[in-house]
Image (cartoon, rainbow, N blue to C red; front, side, top):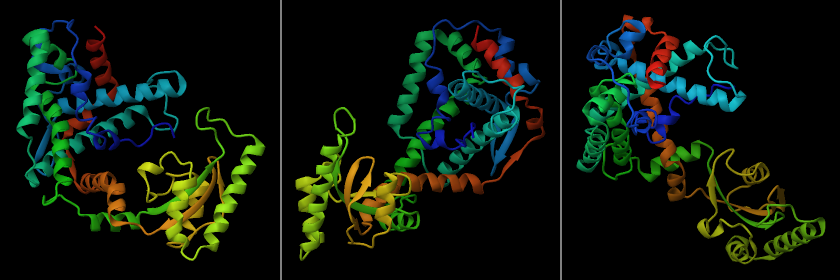
Length: 371
């Protein structure tokens, strides 16, 4: 499916969607001039006749102005245009359905409303948990604003923000959201905070989400420099060595204890130095043959020789360690938490939401941005 579900991906990867204003507007010093009336009315009014400050959505008493939806429509359209150009060489065409058959205008509007909802939920959660920006984070935002004004002047600065469909107040709110998300995450990983999930909670989540831990001895059949497969004779030597190592493990009185020493001596896995106790992973993260073989083992059991595209493996299934599991899922668990909060929240739309036409809004944004 061409239009992938990325509604949370940008926000959950350092709040890119919410901080996109800061990324888009590392401003150009050649901003066109706009009349005071244009700046006051805003692009939302020019596009669909709706005042930019009118409330378009509310979540638990927290309101979003129409211009925030305009901005997110611009972001969503630009993203979709980029995806379509990468996929088939053509940009966004509102007259053509997407590859999944969906109407692009409806898709963009739905996506943009979801992004607005994410910001409202984030702000509500920050208030609920007492999350505020640090002095350093606020100072960084203030410094960036001042640098932009010094580069462009007050009028040029307002013009660049206008081109995003925003007023200064809403632009500051969008920019602040990225820093607020980071502050929210920092609280999540800080022991003792109300948001902190300890290792035992994360271990239980990992165990229920298909995570396992497995060590291995790899005899590689791919040249580490050229990434080309070894010839048949060299590959056969690697297989013979793998079978010999496995025989030594079978003959050992304590094969689990001896496994690490043999792995240190023979394994050609370049990641072993960073993962001396093995890898903690879930479905789809390792080579398929490796994953399947590891999951067939009980804890502390050793596999036969397993062949993958990387070479020959001897696999030891290890217990799922608490710390390793916690580290493996810490970010994912936070994403799940935030996603659940967004899904749980109910967003009430005002009647003006029905007046939004994504094609008209994007055309109005492009008209001023392309000047």
